[in-house]
Length: 71
Length: 271
Image (cartoon, rainbow over all chains, first blue to last red; front, side, top):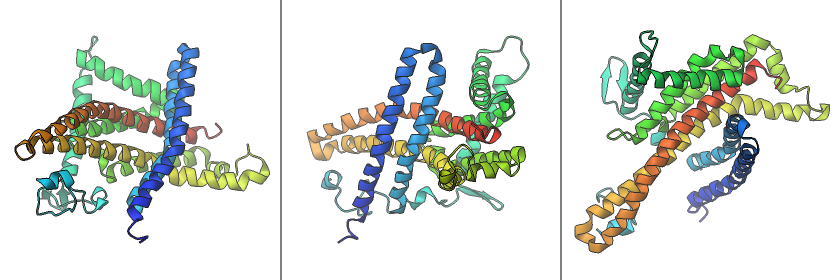
């Protein structure tokens, strides 16, 4: 019974793993937009830092993505 | 034709689109198209060489001759080179970043060309959706930042990671362990998997949407008016096509940016 449900559980696990990064990327991008709106002359720097923040936050979702292959 | 709509069992005898039996194909090499001596050329290898020649051709024809007024194409290539050199290499690593600009530029151009194969008609195959390629590129970056760290700071490079001075003493073993794992193991893996996962997901999405649109529309003789359901799928697939061009360029940029950041942390580990 458990063996039959294996694939579905991995997918649910990935869905759960994507919640945190989803919220995190929302916060990062939201604050970056706020920074760009408040200080348009610093927009380039804010954008670079935003991409970095997204990339680091995304790492958690990517670790969850690996489950798709190993589960 | 019921099988198209239901697609219940996956019987290879019927011509329906079904899930591949094994995802291992993404990590293994298939049979070679042709071989030269001990070198076996699969489609992926041919595309690697094609991407290499495209990058070389762009740089050669864009920058050949030392014209006072560059051609239109030359200006475009110059602005691309200037972007990677000034904004990414010098902007992130600092004044000595110009030394790493050639590596970052070749990384950027190779990844961008390889990714754009995904939306090139008749190729339709993102180079980085085979794990070997992003993994190799990520390991190259890993070797560079580890070697630079040890050459520039000797044993202090490793010591500062496992015993961070800026953290309270009680927390140092824990933070050191996390930093050690994150820098030496998680960094190359996430760097590679980020590119790989984005390309696989985009490729799958395009294949599913366009192929289901095509399958439904071409079955109009059998299923009649219900074939109309293929039209929105096809249109949606074309919309995703544009989105994938953006993703291809953005992922190349992020890979280059993160490589620069990792090199920067080895050049100046204090901050």
